[in-house]
Each structure stands twice: as C-alpha cells, then as structure tokens.
Length: 91
Image (cartoon, rainbow, N blue to C red; front, side):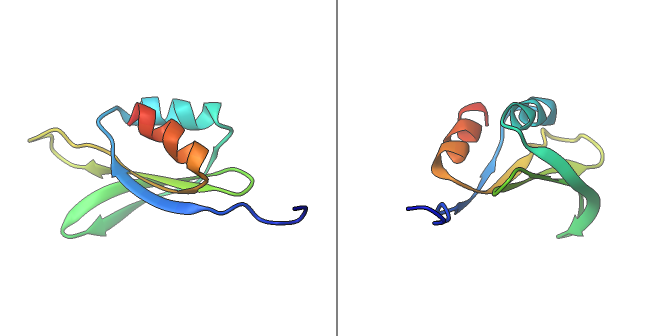
C-alpha cells in the first residue's frame, strides 16, 4: 500500500564487537551520527551516540572509565526486521 509506514521494532542487545566495527556497519547501512553525549546511569558513565537514516534510529552506548573488565557496547535499534538482523550478525 502506498503511503503506509513500515512497522518498526525495538530491540536492545549487547555487542561483543568493537564500537568501530559497529559504526562501520552503520555507515554501510546509510546511518549518520546525529548526536552524542556522555550520560550517567546507575553510577556509571556512558558515551551514547545516536544514528539515524530516513526512518530508523539506532543508539550505541559504551561505558567510559577504567578498564577493569571487558566493557561491551549496548546497541538499541528502532528499526525494521532486516536492519535488526544485519546488526545482530556483527554484534
């Protein structure tokens, strides 16, 4: 149907790959970084970046601080099924 919006789903997942790899995949999928900030949540500092394309939004959050243990980025996607699956394959 013309004019009908695609159904978007919300998915949050930890990633076991580097932020650089995630950002490269997002660029390949035509996402642009539109905002970034450092936020505090549960006594931890996080560097959060927001990426958008025409109809989808993805945030990538990685913990800031001393490296005592491996810190995995968290990816939150408001997107279609295909985008979620493409990101899940690299995460």
